Structure formats: C-alpha cells, structure tokens
Length: 426
Image 1 (cartoon, one colour):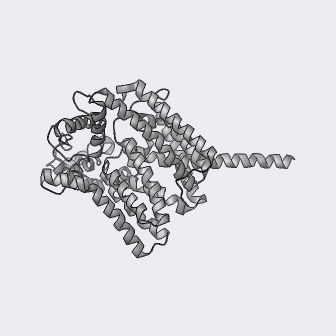
Image 2 (cartoon, one colour):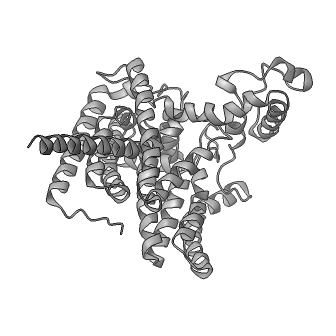
Image 3 (cartoon, helix red, strand yellow):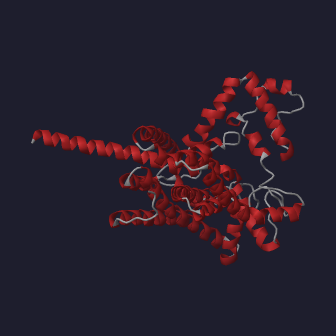
C-alpha cells in the first residue's frame, strides 16, 4: 500500500539531511551567481524568463495579463507563473530582491521534491533505492540550474511529483477526496502547461488493472473533472470578459506545432518549396499563430510522403533524444562544464533506460505503472510539438528513480556475492 509517511527514523534522517543539503547548495549557487542565470535582458524582454518578469510587473502596475503582446492583454501563455512572480514582487518590490526571493523559493521546491522522490521510489522498489534516487537527484547538476533560471520547470516538476503520489493513493483508496485532489493538481499543472490536462487518461489503464467497475470509473472521473473545471473557471471567465470568446487554454498552440516540424532547426527540403510555392523559405516560420497549424500540416504531408524515414526518425528517436539525451543546462555551474555535463547526461540516460528494462522484468508491473504511464504521457504529448531539454527536464526525476533501482540491484548483487564467497571459504 502506498504511504505518505516515513516511519523509520534512519530513513527520515537521511532524507532530511539530503533535503537540507540540496537547499543549502542551491541557495548558495543562486545567491552567488545572481543574474548569471538570466537568459534575456531585463531592459528589453527578449527571452522567456525576462518576458515572465515583464508580465508580472505589468500585472501589478496595470492590472493586465500580457505576454508577447506589449501592454495589451493576451492568452499567449497560461497565467499562473506570472501571477506567482507578481506575488513575490508585491512583497519584495519590483527589483532584484523579488527575483532573488523567487529563486530561493525554487530552491525550496527542489528540496521538497526529494520527499516525493523518496515515497514514490520506495513504493516502486524499496527504501534503499529511494535513498539512492534522492542522492542522485542531489548530485544532478541541472537541478541547480533550474533553481536559478526564472522558468516554470522547477514548479511544474514538483506539481507532477505530487500528482503521481496523489494518483497512486487515489487508485488504491478509492475515495472522493483523493480524486478531487487529482483534479486540483491536474488543473494546477495545466495552469503552467495546458497539455497536462489529458493526464487523467492514464487512469483508464490504472483502473482496469485495479479491476474498477464501470460505475467506479465514471464516478472517479467525474470527481476529477469537477475539481478541474472549478479550478480552471477563473481563467475561462477572464478570457470571455476580455476577448468575448471561450479560450480554454492559450492561442499559441500553432507555433510550437509548426516549429516541431523543424528537423534539427533546419528548413524543409528545397523540393517542399517547389511543391508548395505559396511558402517562402525566409518567412515560413514567421507570421501569425492562426496560419501556423496549416503550415505545419503541409510540411508533415510532404515529409511523410516523400521523406518518410527521415520524418519518422525525427518524430520518434530524434525528439526523444532532444528531450532527454541533452541536459537542461544552459548556464554551466562549477565544477561541471557543458561538455562534461553532456557526457554525464548521456551515460546517465543509458543507466536509467537499463534500469527501466530491468525493473519491468524483475518488479511488480502494477507498482511501476503510475510512473511509466506518466513518463510515457509526458513524452508522447511533446512529439507533435517542439521537443527540447527544457520540456524533458521535469521527467528526468522519473528516470532518476530507474537509475537508482539499477544501482541498488548492482549493490545488492555485489554484497550477496561477497557474502557467498566468505561462506564458501569458511
């Protein structure tokens, strides 16, 4: 049975020590590095992080939620992240103090993540593997970059870890309160990244495995849906009052879809432009979001018709590689340079994938399913769109659990082999 409690004092001590270590290291890094983590210019918003900061200031000063639209209201992004930033600015002012405070808040999130890593990995494997997973996470240097950069990934990762834990509890305990909690967390995740909204689809498999009746399935989904709708209602009302139309999430879905067709950021083949003369190589990836989807569809029609292997590779192995084999590490932190971190990431992923396969062979598949399905969902959902390390980063913590399992198995095997040799000698 899944539990949120940690009863053994030794395990609590190890976990709290690791959480404190992560908090101290990440805090020291963000305090000493400061604006080193900025990706853009605070004076002229030219990257996502400074655009979020600009949006937060605009929200406080003008009461307008805008992003990529000057001072005019927009639905380019979901609102929760700039609202969070605005909250810190209300308390600490609109200068550097608020940015520093928010980075320290992200350090707290990184430390809190270890708790969920422990209880989820313990449920799947055992306490040893759970502690090893926490150690690996504490040593995984992109986490410290994520603490310093003003983007959604640290917060989103913590929400997803909490969602996995609550989902496991909900399936096992079959109570309304837990499913309402799932709905709230799905809505919370959607307020950062709307593609999280379809996450409850994985429950169909979990319910089938747990032998839920059809009535139980419908009732549980209604609880999830009700909580989700109530939480998203303020966003829908705002959009209706502002734009006089129902906008469920954002109006920026077309651009990520179009950009997702760019194989290694290159243009389509020259023959594409001969077949579709209405498009210009210089402007095909420019223009309004409303026409981006049609452009992307035309590129895919051409690609899968005339270059099927190339596009099939890109939409499977290529995007998986970009999501996970490249570290989310855009500002290197001593002592790991970018090149070294790339090598570490590659080796780590090989270990994690081997651990995943070994776990599927050796362990209870029912216990693995919540994490495996979450990992599959948040991988497949990115395949039609832009896929790069920033979007894959929240899933890295799930790979860490499988890497930890393999290391635990190797340590257990080595220890048993050593004991066997001693017994034979005696």
